[in-house]
Length: 390
Image 1 (cartoon, rainbow, N blue to C red):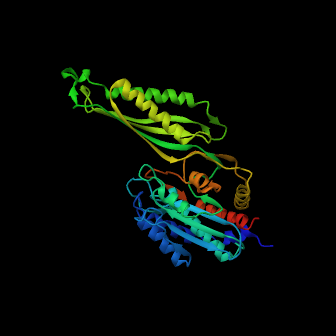
Image 2 (cartoon, rainbow, N blue to C red):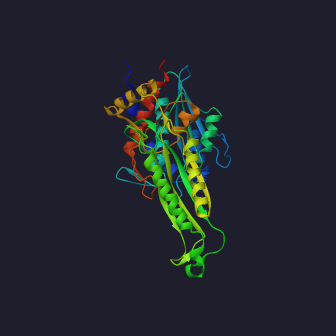
Image 3 (spheres, one colour):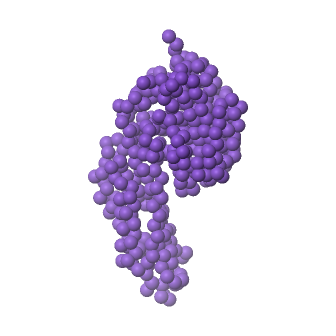
């Protein structure tokens, strides 16, 4: 009987995987400008003689990449999905030191996509995928607030969907089966007129700062009301303010106040209800203080949950044990990613599992190449376990 773990371990090539990751990292790709790096991935896959499709999925400025490796026999399709856009920070070129890859997007998540490509290579070279298929999808428009996730939505709506999906975000432990929904909150408070000195009538104007303070107070009050809405794995629902700004000088009455934060909710809370709470508070404060308030409730993704006893979770756990010698604990996903949308929009189970990488959303991203090798092995083994299951 063949030893899949041993054969795939031998087939996964450290230098080849690293070269793929470097080729992706060296192409700058801030969100909404990922066309060049998607073209680079296209080139890498075509050079390896993998099939490539380039659906626009609603974003023709940077068509997505879809590639498949098929066994030729009936079975399930395991999807690998990742985004190639990065947050809007100064570009850091790739470098490797002591087995660690540094550079923009290496941990979030170009290194993970390189691991997906290497898993496909290893499956093809060993011939261990005897049923079903593997499909890789990569896209733009992931990172908020610059992206809105619509290209992935388009891929799902157009049918680029497997029977289950793995996403190589930077979460190596635990195995997440639940995650909160997230909306980014932006509030703009204004009054009529011009900025004016406090002693020349400024103190008689409606105060955008007082109105802003009242919004913060009301959000804090709501946050306390949300505290009992809690899940033993995912934590509690919340309302959070992280930014507040107003005014040009200490004794001038400003005409604008800005604040921003987040709203997170659990499965079972309707996304629309969360937005209605937010907008109601803003309307009441605007009326109370005689100001105008505009609020943007920018949804990143809705809350999700999958059944931890389902076959896909079992296949992944088996693969992880073969690759590492241990099972992962069942837990929650602390952030929001595209897996939420695969569950809610696509109706398929999604597991976020990637390298134990550091520095996501900073100038100091890093990932050990050995972690990318481990992810490639876990992904390839999951395909073997899952695609040919009944």
